[in-house]
Image 1: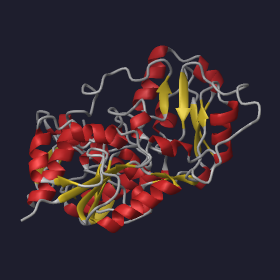
Image 2 (image 1 turned 180 degrees about the horizontal axis):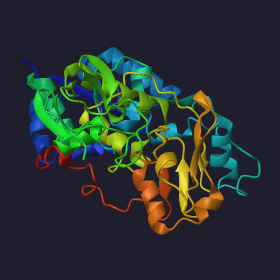
Image 3 (image 1 turned 180 degrees about the vertical axis):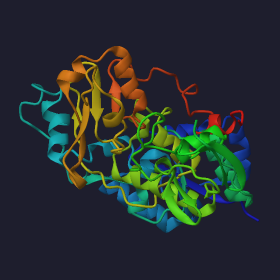
Length: 183
Length: 235
């Protein structure tokens, strides 16, 4: 039987969850024995080359590109996992959800401590190549169907390891108290 | 001297003074009933409903129910635990609980209950309601994003002459916790710490104290909430 295929991506996240995947330490070698990686920053494959079994999503949806990638993952992965607080509830990017988008952009490009006085023409990035910001940051499961959730900021390496092994081997997932944390 | 009554929690024989509320009575018998609004020593309010139990077949809040002889209490049946998990999830989606950015994380009772019930994701959509932060006081600040309106602060924190330092402003959906800045300015450091510690979430925080305890040694990092009660010596 061929190995299960895993794809990963980071949407509106900080790549901390991906660092936590690497934090399984030497078990990363076992992981490569256990699964094959497809589209992922880990192997730098940019586009899906085949149907995947497991898609791991870090980060929520803050712009149109995040939504596009997430929908692409849903199309190309049999199982989707929301990895980390941002994917599950928007996380720190979602702290802008109660601030009007214009105010956010003004603070970032015009009125912020590092930009005030340095942007006399009041230029804000507005190119058709750039993804458009959404009105707020959405948790992944409010955009597509998500099958499993692994909380944490970042999720503990043991949680990721336990979940992947359980999913691939079909064994029962163990969730010891120390590994399920929201921070 | 009050009478001793006998009652059962999940089949376990318990004894306590008659009239004591069920949460505190259970605690004396090494049984943990979760609470968010109740604090030992202050008059129970029964507002958060997390201490819901089934007494003789009826749902009741344990903090407002005095123990009586022969009570049969269900505390950890599947439907009670599910009910409590739903309440926790509701609280998580109705406020703006960014655990990774919260100073109370690791010592937060709401978060600890999320851990206890293994809440991986709330089943309800997030509200993301705008809430205000009041950082005007010299010693404390109030972050209403995290407030669950348990009224612990209103009921337990008073000035020296008995005035309330905290109060609820508005009603229903618009209700929010407010602080009397004049009275708050007169609080001692101990009183400010007590206000912070009594808050079950990270809504009332003492200034210049954030992230005091390192990750790994915070209150609920290693042990679930209530485990100290469950491990206590049974009277």
